[in-house]
Image (cartoon, rainbow, N blue to C red; front, side):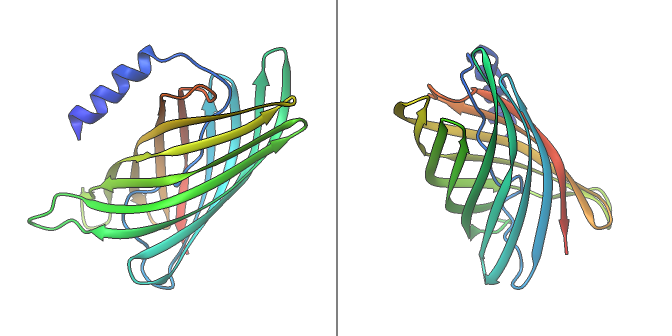
Length: 210
């Protein structure tokens, strides 16, 4: 995990930027219990994007949860700026749970997202995987670092100029569980082989089970 984090940070320092920023789950790999709910609110920053995003996650079946994301972003597109609407959805399946003989929780799934504004339309879809491990500090607090990746297909139409791209968004983050009813999350985002989006981004926010 430490070697992966160092490698991703090194690659990110060499990467150029483009237009936007991917949005994701902002949670470790642990699947929600049946009938549990999780809300979240986040801010996103990258070279050409600043925005806010909300999330609702639900589970109605063991080892399966799904989420809905929505928010607004301000995009710098060359000499112009636009406000875009973002909507997304994903589903995850828990395939491994941390134990004495298994170091991490692992979840696999898939997600899609749309982003739209005046003469600006982007659609993203692809499978994803995330791994995490919860490290307790005490009986009431812990931190859960996580790493995830997605095989992302992107289709866009910007100012009547359509295009497509395939990239591998990588997410490295951690969720701090030290406040009752709230979990602080931070996430670094790196999009490998991306010719459209900003190559790096940063997000921070709060998850709250209810």
